[in-house]
Amino acid sequence: MTQQSYGAGAGGEAGGAPGPRTFVERLVGALKLDATVYEEVEHDKDAIGQAAGVVGLAGIANAIAAIGTLGAEGMVAGLVGCFVGWLAWTAVVWLIGVRMFGHTSDFEELLRTLGFVFAPQILLVLALIPVLVLQAILGVAVLAMTLVAFIRAVRQALDVDTGRAFFVSAVAVVAYLLVGLVLRGLAGQFA
Image (cartoon, rainbow, N blue to C red; front, side, top):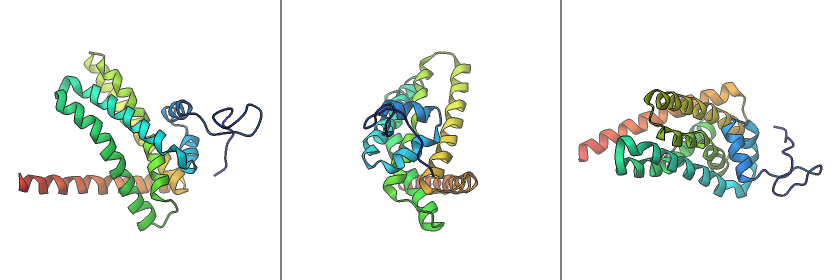
C-alpha cells in the first residue's frame, strides 16, 4: 500500500513531510470510513492508546444508548462489551486471517486497526433522540458503517484485496457467532 499525504498533523509540517494525523483527525477519518486511517494506525505502534480511546468512546455511546432499554446493567454491558468485543474480534481475525490463511499481520497491528472500526458506534449517542424510527435508522446505519469499516480495516491490516478481506471478515463473523453460541450454551448448563 502506498503512503498518502496526510497534511499537517502531529509530527508533520504543512508543505513538508506528512506526519501522522492527530487522534481527532483519525477519528473523523474513521467516521468517514477513510481506509488510509487504518493503514496509518496499522504502522503506528503508538496508536494503541488511540484505538483504545475509540473503543472507550464507542463503549460510552453504547452505554448511553442502552439507558432507555436496558437500564444500568445495559450501560455496564455496553461499555465492557466494546472492549471484550474488540479483543475477541481481533483474536478471531488474527486466527483466521494470519494463522489459517497465512496473511501478513501481527496481533498488535490488528488490534490497532480494529480499534478504529468502533468509530461509527460513537454515533449511537444520538439514540437519545426519543423518536423510535430515527433510532431504528441510526442502528441500521451504524451497523452498516461498522461492517464497511471492519472490511476496510481487515484489508489494510492483512494487506489483501477487498474480496479477500470480505471473505476473511465473513469467516470471522461466522466463527465469532459460533463461538458465542457455544459459550452461551455452556453458560446455560452451569447456571
